[in-house]
Amino acid sequence: MDNLATCIHSRYEEQGALGDLEEAISLHQQALELCPVGHPDRPTSLNNLAICIVSRYESQRTLATSSHLPPTIFPAAHQSINNDLQEILHTIPPRLLQTNTGTLLSQAEMIVQFYEKPEHQLLVSSLEQDGDWHSNLNDLKTSIANYFRYASLSHRWGSNEPLLQDILGHGSVYDMSPTDGLIKLKKFCHTAAHHGYSWAWSDTYCIDKTNSVELQEAIGSMFLWYQQSALTIVYLSDILPSSAAGVLSSSVWFRRGWTLQELLAPHTLLFYAQDWSLYMSSEAQNHKKDPHVLKELAHATGISS
Image 1 (cartoon, rainbow, N blue to C red):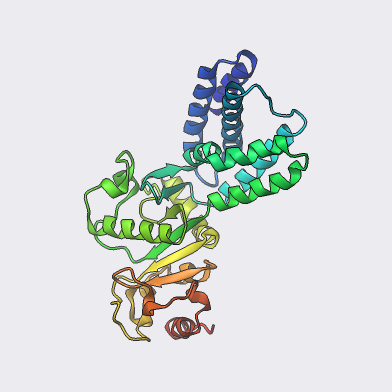
Image 2: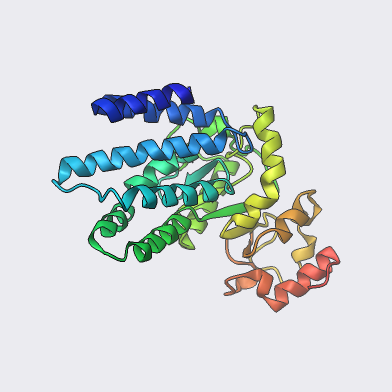
């Protein structure tokens, strides 16, 4: 499928038919879906899709203006952007939930959205207007990194947790009938958005557990995904907001097999009580740097802070 898409894209470059370009993008997206994280062909699929989306962007600019991209600058710039994009996507989950819309997107869909963002288009446009294009390219690389920042959820599974198949094809999770699991998911997304993150990831709905290959790859990548997340939100369903200090270690969250990994991997972590208020009403931006919480964590895990 990837080879067919590449051939169709080559035909587009020769003949300029936009229908060929859209068909190539669609086929590359389908090919990417068949290459889970860890698949040897995934980097190639990501790169091919990015090349097609750049072609779409350039075709739109050509139609909108009479100017053309400087041939000596943009090939190198776009290749650098694509390399940075691949590097980032290689270290994040294959699907993320968009916090403002509540829709689940694949990496292919996220790439499309990224290239169509007005901020990205403005930065790319600035490359042709500024002789110091390397400086603007650094701004664009920062824009890429910031765009794909996401919050991850660490929690104890409860009843009616939404799975991938429950969400796919249903549009926004905000419009779905509430269950205990969906209420938790919505609260998580709202909390992630409150902290400024456009993307959210959870081990419930972002992994295709019916696909044994993807499931094994996800298990092997879990530490990296929590480590790469900008913020890990720990939901303590059994800790009341009025609880006194020192109750952290009594939470069932500490009895899970995955707790230690999800505690150690993130750089930034915040504990939330049952009502989704910050634990102990703390105003800390990172509980891994809060001396009071660190003392409780040391008591709960036996690991000195």
